[in-house]
Length: 288
Ligand SMILES: Nc1ncnc2c1ncn2[C@@H]1O[C@H](COP(=O)(O)OP(=O)(O)OP(=O)(O)O)[C@@H](O)[C@H]1O
Ligand code: NI
Image 1: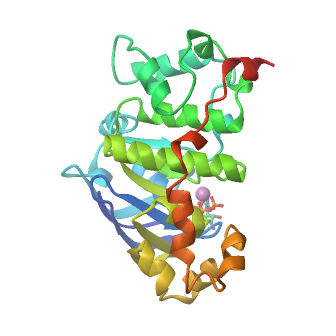
Image 2: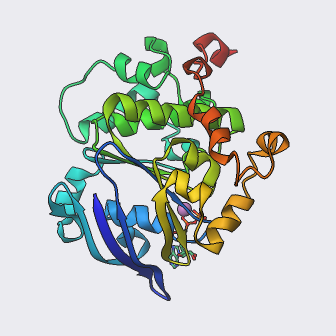
């Protein structure tokens, strides 16, 4: 995907100004910025859903040889979920509370295809229980981390080429965050899915992204390989984000200042989060 867009809302123009971003097949790109910098606006623009918030987007979004901004809604609907899928921010509110998990999988499947596949391989791929009893649960029976895994499974259902992840770990505790990050990384390696990973937390993005773009006041102030961002940040805003990384205290104790010396080495520990850390809660624990 290659895009160059400007976007805004009535009474709030210029939320994105000539933002240019490229995501190669199989690449994980991070988009980082504080609250209100326009991250979700970018995601909604890609999905063709900005109109739902009365926003408008101009420019071009090239995906699989077509410009998404020139597609009709009917054509966009075919792409959404099938070729481009979204992992939303708050897992529990994104699921239908009144539908069993099995029914939600079926509904999602039937949006684009007929019949009904075996769900086990999909559930196993996100380290969720594969027993039939799991599919009879309701969202409220899940922990937030499991709900997020389930949403990732839904997003991957049709094997999309591009996954848009909008702060997918912001509702999770630190350990669960690391597990979900490891999951994204593994899924990317196993399936080759491209991921645009959005976050306000530079540390979590650095853990899985080859490249990071920094969004500030509607513009990309930096767009470089992750290592460069950490070693030689060019923009003052990037330096502020680096200085604000809260998840490095352990490292800073060992070799301060982490950003200049060991920032990336520290993040390697997240890279190497062992598969064993991706534990699957068993059903008995869920029900207790
Ligand atoms: N429907 C709307 N009408 C007017 N302004 C809006 C609308 N939606 C968002 N905005 C404004 O656009 C800017 C960007 O919002 P956006 O949701 O894209 O930010 P974000 O980077 O995703 O923030 P967060 O990290 O809090 O999710 C903000 O200033 C926001 O107030
Ligand atoms: Ni947002």
